[in-house]
Image (cartoon, rainbow, N blue to C red):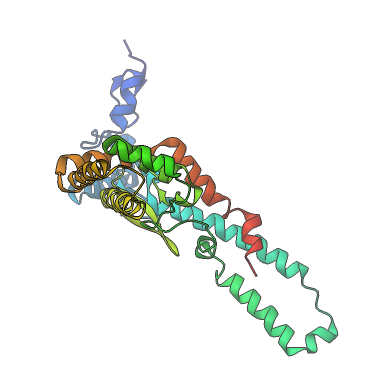
Amino acid sequence: MTRGRKCLRCGEDMRPSHLTRHINRKFKVCDPILSNTSYEDMKTDYDRYYRRIVLKEKEYKCAACGRGYAYPQSRNHHQKECEFYQAKLEAEVLRQQLEVLRAEQLASITVNAETINNTDTVNNIGSLTNNINNGTVNNNNVNQHLNLAPFGKECYDHITPQEWREFAFDTYGGFDRLMERVFKGNPKNLNVRVRNTNKTYAEAWIPPNWETMDIKDITQDTVTNCVNKFQDYVEDNPGIIPPSSVAKMDKTLGNILRDKKMITEKMKKARMIFENPTFRKHVESNYKELTDGSTINEHIV
């Protein structure tokens, strides 16, 4: 009695659901029926076995970082999260946009016989064409037009004195609200990009580029900068809270920086802010406003 399917290689009868696992076995290839197997097929199977088992090679590699995988599904899943592969895709999209822009620029240039004799005009056209061909107009030019505050130099102008007073009276809980108010209350402070919450790194806006940093360094710098700004504001505005509250506030802020448990808790809070889906969406939308075709066209010349 047949079970449904036979392996064309070894002739074993099995269920259809088992046949797929049987064919794709990683560590052992089934013994072929020599009369049904050509020399080329046997050599291919042996070479595959030798590379995968003996040399420990991975057959399917990422097109960007070169990391190898045994199965194409694993490689495809990796490429969806690979920073280098995504950057390669973005570069390809930008290259296509530049090609379209180059075609539009060249089509719009009408040179008559008199203009050709003008050496300066011809040189300017050639310079423009070379800049487009050489990729001078790239993502860095767009980055320079981002209206963002550099990481570590955030803008606090949107926080009102009444809010500072409330933060100071309840320093420990108010510190969390201060960090939220800083990064969520002003579009200029959307200067941290978390592309993948499962990774240990993120990107901080340090002009003129997005710099990749460890997420722990970003959150620790955020906590330290907010503590310093908190203390500076109260010192510059001595009447905002009573002197007794100032001493209590200074003690709490000092403990946040000195106590390992407290600073770890505040770093987790900062990471929650940066990994918040709404915050990440605003960061990406703010960036894409200057990376669409129309914006590139505005800054091309």
